[in-house]
Image (cartoon, rainbow, N blue to C red; front, side, top):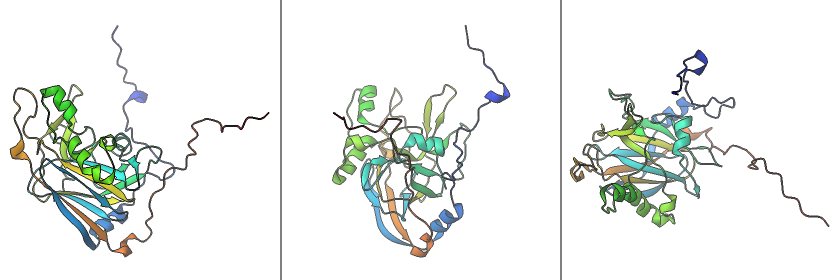
Length: 288
């Protein structure tokens, strides 16, 4: 028998975001707004070529800006703790605590057992994109990165410049491997779920000069791939697919250090002080 759909008041869908009695999820918007507007010194700037990847460090208390260098281009972003790569961005928990698409004042959270903000978004030139006519939103945490394994599965061909491979090559100088690459934040990518609950993406709406900026809450290692799908306006698989090389563009990265006076009162977040026993008793030394 089909299940009966019940629509009682108590069962209506509600916002699944957690509510904190400790204030742990509160964001001091005035502080982050002042940081975004503060005088800052440029400490590093580089441009990632098309269909490539690069890793870089963002010290705690610094700003990192991801910029469309020549026009619309999707970037796949990974973030780790610089000193402990087991602590890394957790896309699923960020979706729960923040949203499936992030913008200014949202935070990017780390994996268990650390569970703390790695970064806070301080600037988003596409922040007014909102929800489009198809229900799409920008800066996506729903999807994953493109990878050569899925490509082989769908096309029967090998291609070594998917985002997973670009990120893998990017982090090798830092002693990391393919196993450290994780689910991404798809910067500048518009996505959603259709009426069949299937994931879709649309052409990137960004233009030259658009940016996404975040504040490093701890010392970070970041890596970004300039997606080989470019601005995602061309289908990559199936009967109507073709090589989207013409839509691929570079992305520029800037790291800036705000004036120290603007950081007064700020401190790096700590993991929750859970003891980590998971209900297991302490082992006892055997007695005779």
